[in-house]
Picture 1: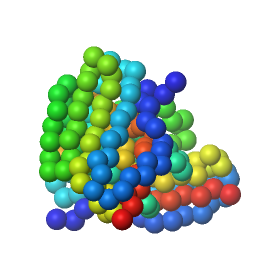
Picture 2: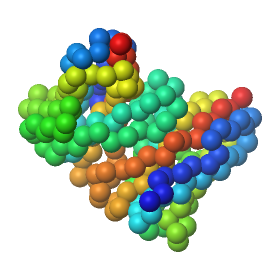
Picture 3: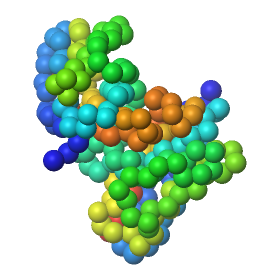
Length: 113
Length: 110
């Protein structure tokens, strides 16, 4: 059974640019949640995708957007990057949207300069 | 004030000691309580899950939830150097959003 994978591992972008992060969910999981984890802090919920539809969103501006594909993999897009967007971006997959157990990927570390 | 508060540590203990971790929260709607372990530069890994109040034991780990005090705990018995990590509490109400504490860094010294 393949776990949750994310790409790329690391990324360096300049303020104002756009970035796309990718996540492959665990086999059989139809739900993907995205989190932002700043250094020394706990993860913060960005949004969740369930069967290709957004299914809940945290306190993040519209320049954070996402997509889920028919195979349940997902993308996180961030436009107009700001220095404060520098963080570890985690995706987590689960069997269903209501499932308590979420399996996290290793994350993508984004640095904005 | 954050919805979930957690002492950042570091909490340093000798090998074999009991590690005691806790979180307090303010949202009385939280029903599901979880503890995650996160090693450096890795994603969080679910350790324990508890629904509502009570205790739950799994091997060396014991999770406790006291909803009346809005307080949850995780105890690790017979701690090992491999337990050195950041421990995150997480909570969920009826919806799908997990709210995390800031994490406590634990160091188990041989």
